[in-house]
Image (cartoon, rainbow, N blue to C red):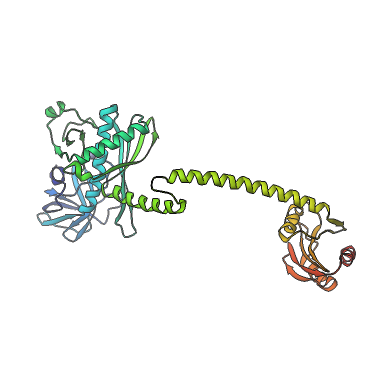
Length: 408
Ligand SMILES: [Zn+2]
């Protein structure tokens, strides 16, 4: 490699004066408008190991991407910069720091799992959610290990990791030769001893790693396993660490506060209170079902006293004391099968009835709007509606109403 990787040994350098070694027009797919720039030194970590590349600038020119290609760190920029030019590199240290917090939390959790169970890390990536303006909303680490770990054991591992954070142990990288590497026991996904870089969390973990890392465990700040489930014979774990874990805690705290208010309960008692509410809801639901059943029984009794008049095109119910909901229910229950228009006269008050009439939509030879007009002329009706259902009131006695429907 032509380039000195400054982040290998010091991840907190956020500006660097570098000299351009080569700058060539890119023919990489999607980067046709860019130049591929190689420098004598760099603070830009390329994409790799489940992590996106660093973001930043060469002077004022944004770096579009950084990739390791054929063993070289290649920066993609839209501007051409002549070889030999000195440029000031700047990276977004806030973004790198949050990534390092989550990344090194993964080292710590994996190291502890490896120590206790001997399982290896078989997958890792940082998942990032961004705001519309491109800034980072949240980062979390998603990792796979090749063995099952119980919820109980994960709790213990999580606590140990947080104790390791409080101990403020050093984190550092070494670049051992092949011979030196053979004597060191370390976690690795690859069997490569060349250009090996080992990241050590003193007393907790030794792991082959290519990404920028923190200086001490205390910088991880906090780690929380937020999700875990069996995955491909092992486990998939989601971690939040550092600022992202704190942000998550604040959000959950606010949510918990609102839940406490809704459930009128003390802190730490939400599940209990929700369980009690659940029982009450089940009871209320059962009561509702029972009441509905009682109403149906009452409605059926009521309808037994109903006079049902069967004409050639109409079935007319005189159900004096039912209400509108019951009248509509009566139509809805019968209209699908009936080959006739169903009319319910209800809520009798002296010589006034309210009425609802409905029909099956397949009954195209009868117009309910026409019926409404005829009722206005013959029964002093008021009201109207659609071709499927009309409603209103009539001021006529039951005999006049019966004669009217018989005449249709
Ligand atoms: Zn790593």
